Length: 372
Image (cartoon, rainbow, N blue to C red):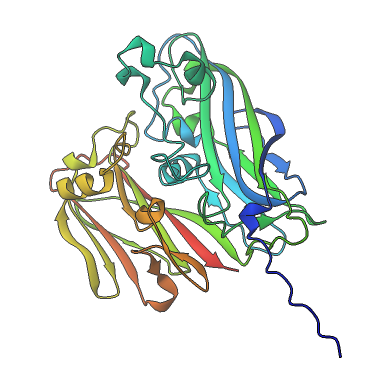
């Protein structure tokens, strides 16, 4: 009796696919206006979405008085609706921008690929790239003029450019929709009358991997990258305890402390308002009343530019650019918090006595890798 020949193992997914980027929408963006809805193309596996807000922002008479959440919260809420799945992203523009400091969307070889570069620090003329800053670098002047604006955000679907967990299959009859809710002037500037007009456009780019041909393995689509956000008021000095909801593998926890909500840039770095930080998983104290100076040094180590003022970040995914180890679920990074198996997670920010607090808040974003 003839025996069947053994089948050759399928080639790994990365060897049989190709990343594609295409613009799927270009819509008028009006601050405080109607929500923007954009259906995603029904093709391949979603790697992520790139958002670019550009155009002119006209100011008359005097400064509009930017507030602390200016300008990124002109995207008041970004939400991705997926059939049969709870929204993996429901986050403000500011929260999403902070998360972009921890992404590796296109390469593992760079430091935080979409982190903005401060052009003013490029003192040598030959180092400046006028074309880049004209169309790709964040630029939001508020002079009395028709100011040219450009803002970028990345919405990640996969863990990083090497670990594809989180890819969303879109090559089917279901419809996935991105919804963007524009922020109102009153929430971002102190004198809305000084912002007389806008001519802004939101370009939406879909980045996806092509479907693999026969003989190539399909990617694991049993995971999702999830970003959630919540906010609480700071009404007095002392411990500000933030309860971190359990769920999935926690990749990072990022706090943004705004001690004076009407000041832009943020009135002062946390070093002037916060004296210690703590982070506890069950009874394990990962950080125990550590002085803020040590935390700022640790979380900015290896960065070309430090994180924005007011940021306190716990990056449990910080080793992702190194050599990971793997198991049956894929890559594993030292430091990840497998939160399904713990009882409680608490982050504590101790606001110093005498700190200036005017409508003060702490906004927290959490990035997770979750099984569907």
